[in-house]
Length: 164
Image 1 (cartoon, rainbow, N blue to C red):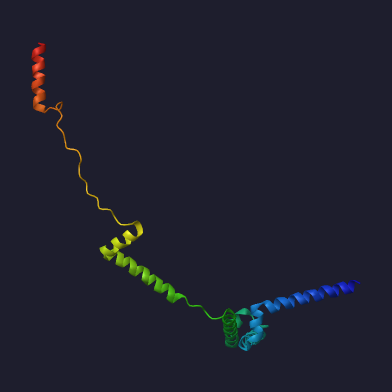
Image 2: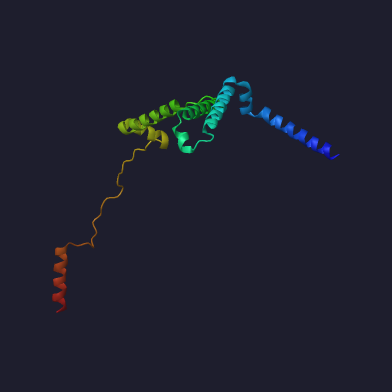
């Protein structure tokens, strides 16, 4: 009985792994793309050759070995090529961004340089400016209580003489 349960669990795990592999885009690309498989195979072979040459040598001698360096370089190039293939084509959005930047800078320069354009933009954003002319509805009036300084000194001297 226990053996049947273990077999059932293993079968379920294998089924789930197969389903996950079918749905994974990287696995699909690996299955379909011969160039990707060749790159990975080349990288593996180069790495194993480099490892076999390094086996038994010290790290200092391994750095001086030109064949090891060549194999490691080939491994790195193959892995880079495989990674680029898996990632897909590079999307270039730089043209749209630079065009947008040029348009924005040009608009700012036009607004700074042209007073008419600046007025149009401000009118469009905030509405037309109302013409306002100030006219006074009152006229300045002369107060009878206000006196000049010469009148103040004469009235003060009159009060002093009357009080004495």
